[in-house]
Amino acid sequence: MKIATFNINGVNRRLENLLAWLTVARPDVVCLQELKATDRQFPKAAIEAAGYSAVWRGQPGWNGVAILARDCEPVVTRTELPGAPSDTQSRYVEAAVNGILIASLYAPNGNPQPGPKFDYKLAWHDRLALHAATLFATGVPVVLAGDYNVVPEPRDIYPTRSYDDNALIQPESRAAFRRLLDQGWLDALRKVHPDGAIYTFWDYRRNRWQRDAGLRLDHILLSPKLTRRLGNAGVDRDIRGLDGASDHAPAWIILR
Image (cartoon, rainbow, N blue to C red; front, side):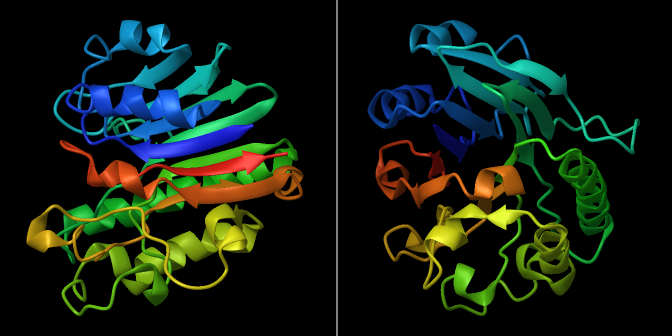
């Protein structure tokens, strides 16, 4: 079973690239983030024609998350993180697919920091940690996949001082990600690739793709019932080099 996460950065604008990647990579499940589309604008027909059913939560202009499943219907279990009923940002959707509970999440960026956006980022991660602990305690197989907007370690960003004040690398952000690992979740990409840099994001500015000046922002975390099934993991870097590409590349795992 191949499960991928992909910050598409505009699902309709990148639809051609998305469909081409689905044809070649043939993931069984895809978690999408940053749809930048309302619920009605989501390209349901095109995705179904590619062999995928989908559940999604859109939002005009920004945010938006979805889960695609090949040859089966995902069953929605949650469309928002608990703990803040007034939060209307579309950043979380959760569904059961072939016996696995899968979450597609798009954490807040948090810039500029310090300030209200950074406070919201940390509060959102607090809510994620509480919900993740609840899921973990059930003992069911769970995948938490998406754009966490956290660079977990210095090796997960190219050598630079330009991000020193960025919310992505602040100690509080890294501590939020570490809190999930301390609960017992497995960072699948790092498990398969324990050494060196792994990047999933290259900013459009300053030729960062051409210079391989990347960051690892997209993560796939596994509950204990899935860790022993982890067979492989990687990043489809070439997708970032296509014309009109998202600034992220798909990250994926294969479960035995």
